Structure formats: C-alpha cells, structure tokens
Image (tube, rainbow, N blue to C red; front, side, top):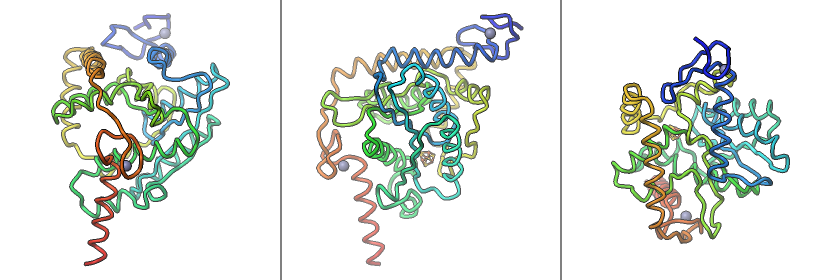
Length: 310
Ligand code: SF4
Ligand SMILES: [Zn+2]
Ligand SMILES: [Zn+2]
C-alpha cells in the first residue's frame, strides 16, 4: 500500500479524507494543518510571548512540540511551557516531569504553578470537602483561572491549549445537552475580548482528530502520561465520546462535519455575545456578579470554616 503523496509505504489510512499516508507525510500533514489553523484564525502575532499549557498528556505535549518547530519561522516570538499542578497526589508528579523533560529537550522555558500557591488549596483538599460539583468541574474552572494568573505573571500575550477536534465537538454537545448554549460561544478557537480584560486563549489543535494527535505523538516518539487521572469519571462526556467514535467509524468525517456546524453556530451566536464585566471579588471578566472561580473558592473557604468550628 503506497502513500497517496509519495512513493513510500503507507502506514495509515485517513478515512475521512480518503488518503493513505506514510509516516513522513502524516507528520507533515498534521504540522501543516496546525499551521493552517493558526493562520486561519490569526492566533498569533510575530512577537507574541505564548504561554503553552502543558499537562503532560499527548495533546499538550504535541502542541508544545509543534509550536516550538513553528517558532523557527517567528524568531521574535517566545514560548514558555506552563504546567498547572492541581495537587492530585501520585498523579501530577509524573506529568510534571514529562513536561519538564520535553521542554528541556526543545530548549523551551518551563514553569510550574500550583493551586496551592495560587489559591491556597489543592484539588485533593477541595474533593475531600465534598462540594456540590464533580472534581473535574472544580478542576476545569480553577485550572483556567490558574493559567490566566500564570500567563499574567509571565507577561504572556497568548495562552495556547491542546484542545483537539474531539474535545471541541464533545464540549459543544455537552453544552447543548446541559442547556449551556452561551458556552458554545466561549468554545471558539480564539477567545478574546475587545477590551483585553483577559489574555486571549487559542487552540491550535482544534481541527485535528484526537486519534491523529495520539498517532502524531507516537510517530514522533513523544513520551506522554498514559495513567488516567484518579478523578476522571466516565460521566456524560465519556458516553458522548463513545457515541461519536462509533458514529465516526460508520460514517468517516462525521466529527469534522459536527465541528464545522458547531463553528458556524458559534459565530452566529457570537452576535448575541453575553456582556462581560469585572467579577466583584477578583476583577476577572465574568458574565455574572461573581466569577465561577471565586464562587468555588468562597464555597471552599466556607466549608473550611465549618470544619474548623466543628
Ligand atoms: S480528569 Fe478531571 S480532575 Fe483530573 S485533571 Fe482532568 S479535569 Fe482535572
Ligand atoms: Zn508519503
Ligand atoms: Zn472572581
């Protein structure tokens, strides 16, 4: 079986495009797609300092590796790898060391910021207090805030995250099923506001299938964390993921069509974008009086007070 683009032996059939690829053409096609996504959405400017969120998983390590390759075209830009340590015992340590190793081999600066330093609590402590939300809900909100804080401390102009096409489609469906249509707007490839109240967040892998990110990591020999987080629950996202994978198997390209529909819906909805204003407690942008991160931290400190009084 020959590669559709050169005479080498193909190792992969990209069913949604109907092409066969050898390792070299596959690697190049992923890097080309990322470059095209960056330019389509105007994600970066030539002198940007980019904080790349690196969790130690395949997506973020792939992102760091590709962005550091593309950096050679933009010598005035700067990349810093940022790992957020949520405080999950026996899990984060491995991820931090994988991120540190890759950053070191790419000669990229690497900084670690912990929930403990930034919020005076850890995810393990929050989970022990048994709040109303799932661990992932607390983690997601606080990690976004932690990244914003970290990027400000570093003086970064952009925060880049490793969300892939599957993440985007799953999140869109979750938002529709949970009635969070406003959130559809916030899941766009570039999240920024005219008033520059927060550092723009970009997702350069948002048009790459998760399976292809994993394959890229394998082909390029990236060592990533495979142990799942102890708090990871199958929950609804897991079920949506399984259904989408099954549908994609039967109808190649379906995920991409769903992604395009989501993007179109998101741009139509953005006309009615929710008004953002500063949070009453921390001053960060929010659609409410108090932002989600402050609500979580307040609830957490109230529980702490109750525990101390008991
Ligand atoms: S699985 Fe959930 S708790 Fe674990 S790191 Fe991811 S979002 Fe956080
Ligand atoms: Zn080829
Ligand atoms: Zn706040």
